[in-house]
Image 1 (cartoon, rainbow, N blue to C red):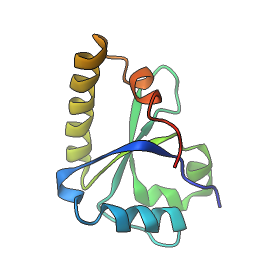
Image 2: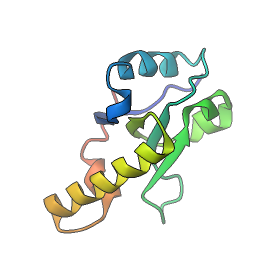
Image 3: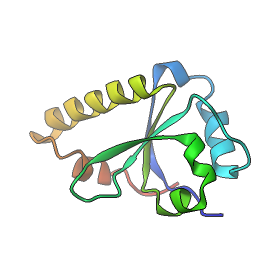
Image 4: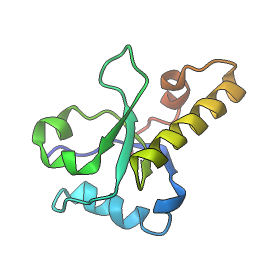
Length: 111
């Protein structure tokens, strides 16, 4: 089984606080499908920046194998979209650009 690649800095959605560590452990083990956990990952297509992935898709070996660095976890797709908006605003404030891929790469050392 392919190991997941986690960023040094993980963004955690407010609705997932309190169960994020347990969810991450289960995702790393790959033994359990976890409903209600969405991952914010590096986009597979270099023309895009980030992707939102329902964690239940990790049961597919091809998805797990090709998954980019995980930057965030959310309890719903709506929360994940909101988190990406926040990351974009943070990126713009810190760098003056909306290039989230480059901004987040500084945290991409896998843990």
